[in-house]
Image 1 (cartoon, rainbow over the protein chains, first blue to last red):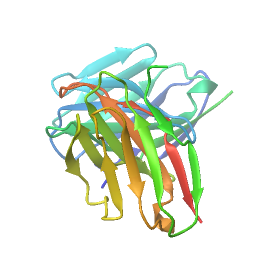
Image 2 (cartoon, rainbow over the protein chains, first blue to last red; image 1 turned 90 degrees about the horizontal axis):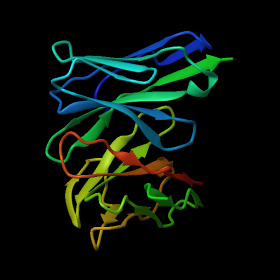
Image 3 (cartoon, helix red, strand yellow; image 1 turned 180 degrees about the vertical axis):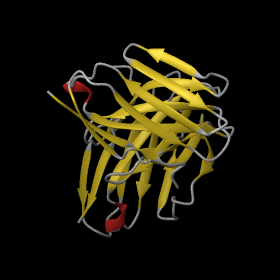
Image 4 (cartoon, rainbow over the protein chains, first blue to last red; image 1 turned 30 degrees about the vertical axis):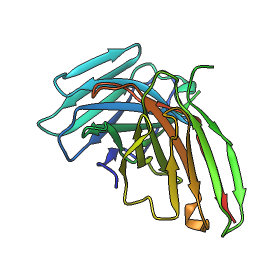
Length: 111
Length: 114
């Protein structure tokens, strides 16, 4: 079963704008990860934020984590048409570190 | 290429046939995972290996599904007596030991049962 909800389910913006995606989860976590998936392809790891971290940056990506609210957000700044993809958050828990994914946000960046 | 590779990329099969998929993880990774993803949904966990030991299986993994990792390297996922509901993308991922490590995914095998 899915860990939680991602919001919005779909997002359409113009190139150059910022895109914000939110993720909520239900159980305690070891860490939270964001992945990107182009249509019909595998997942590409974007960023991992540990449960004791609140914010992390990687290039044009900024991720926040609020464990008290069990939520995370992914911000993509200065979006490009090539950022068009589905974005998934995933939490890890348990000894095996299995990933539990949300339903994803489908981002379209118009040139 | 040192990434996770999956074979085949696409498989079309008739209902009732058996299919087998292969995953070659990143060589130094001792953890290997199988996930299933249906259209418009996030991936769902199926099973997990640490080296050759299958340590956890999801309730999604019915008795028609079997996975192996005989030498702790590559893995196979077999589906017997396929049903139309088995149509999905089957994703393999690997990671090194540890709780604060990312998983690396293959490109997936797209299964269509007709």
